[in-house]
Structure formats: structure tokens, C-alpha cells
Amino acid sequence: MPLNRSFKLNWVVLICLYAVDANAQDVGSIDGASNDAQKTLVQQLGDPSCYERELAEQELMSRGLVAESVLVDALKNSDPEIRWRARRILVGVREEAFNARLTAFVEDIERDRKLTLPGWRKFDGLVGDTRQSREAFAAMTRYEAALLSAYAKRSPDLAAAYAARAEWLKTQADLRPSDSDCVPWQSIAALLFIGSDKDAASYAHGAGRMYSLLCESATTHSINKHAQTSAIRTLLENWVAKSPSYYGMKVALKYDLRETGLQQAKTLLEGKTTSSSYLHYAVITVGR
Image (cartoon, rainbow, N blue to C red; front, top):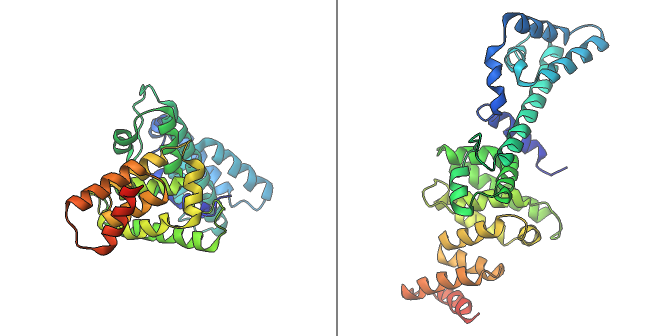
């Protein structure tokens, strides 16, 4: 189980509020009898019989998002048993809807259903629309749904959320062996994607934290392990190209991004910088 599973599940609840599968459009057409039956099942969650409680829970789970509204109402029920079970069911049905949404998005390669996810249009323009890129973006969304949502909506909280996420991942890298998968490539990819957008609120505040994360051995392990099977190398090159020269050149050297790093070095030298540190890395980059 990924180290940040609880983090992901919180975002599952968030994203399902606005990105459920298109089939969920039938939810609004529930008739009164069905709604009454669901309310009866909710009350059965507090039945004295354990068998009856479990039976009601299984039935509500099988109804999926159709039962969402009554489950939300049940969170305010005076019976703690009903509240507890309703919350558990709600998380379960929303997670199922979330997974179904991601699967449908990946399968919509012909764009017949015109399915999208927060941030996808920007990602598509950068990486392209292929099955592999859709699989990569769906995986990024599975790990970083809230962050991608905040980015797509240009939330004023984006910069703080971005910095906190990068810091949390760096902490995980510090605490684990360098060859572990404690820093998921999906999270790194999302941070690189968002962090390379100069128009995003996270850009000015996140470059330093992202640089520190990219210098961690566990991050390097994760990127190198998945560089050939995901869009992460493209995202890394884009981040380097958009980042301040000092950060960009050092990361380019670390990950052997020769062309991108060379362009950064040339830009820096043509600008006639007086910084000895910048000149040092520019010369090394050009020399390679």
C-alpha cells in the first residue's frame, strides 16, 4: 500500500464531488419510491441485528452514487452507528466512482465521450494525447487529484498546497532508503507539471522546494525507474526549461538532460551574469 494512501482517499472524496463518471447523470432521475427505499436502508444501518446492518450496508454500496444524497444526509443522523457506516459507504462509493471515471477517461482515446480531468488540456498540449499519456495523467490524478484540481481552478491556496506537498514528499525521501519507492513518480510528475507553469501561483514559491525534492536520491530512483514508461522525462525537461537557471542547470546535470541544460547555460552566458555559482554550472554544462 502506498505510503500516502490516506492522503489520496481524502482527494477521492473531493474529486468525486465534480468529476463523477458520465453514467452518474442518471442519479438525478431517482423516483420517490427508490429514494424512500434508500432511506429505509439507511435506518437499517442502525438495526440491533448485526446481520441486518451488514445487509443494508452491502445493498447501499451496490447502489453506488445513486445513494449518495441519502448517505450525505445520514452523516447528520443522531445514531453514531448510522453515521459511522454511512461515512464508510460514502467513501467507498465515491472511490469506486473515481476509479471508474479514470478508467473511462483512459479508454476515451477517440474522444467519443469527450471526457476530461482537471489540468488535462494543458497536459495534452505538452505531452500529447495518446493512450500512454492518458494512463500517465490518470495515474497522476489518482495520487494528486486535489492539487491538480486547485491548479485547474487557479485556487488561491495552490501555492501553499504545492509547497506543503513537495515538503511532505521530501520528508518521506529523507526517512526512507534511497532505492525505495517512497516518492511516487505520479506525485513527482504532477508537481513537475504544475511547477513548470509560470502563470500558476505555485511557480514563484515552489521552485526551491521542487529543486530540493529532485535532488533526493529516492526521487532520482523513482524518476529513473519510470523514465521510459511514463511522461515524466518530458515533464522534467519542461520544468528545467522553465526554471531559474541555477536550479535548471543543476537538475539537468543530475538527470543527464543535455540539450535542455545546454540551452539554459547558453541563455545564462548570453545574459552576462556576474554570479560565480551560475557561471560555474554554466561552464560545466557547456563542457559536457
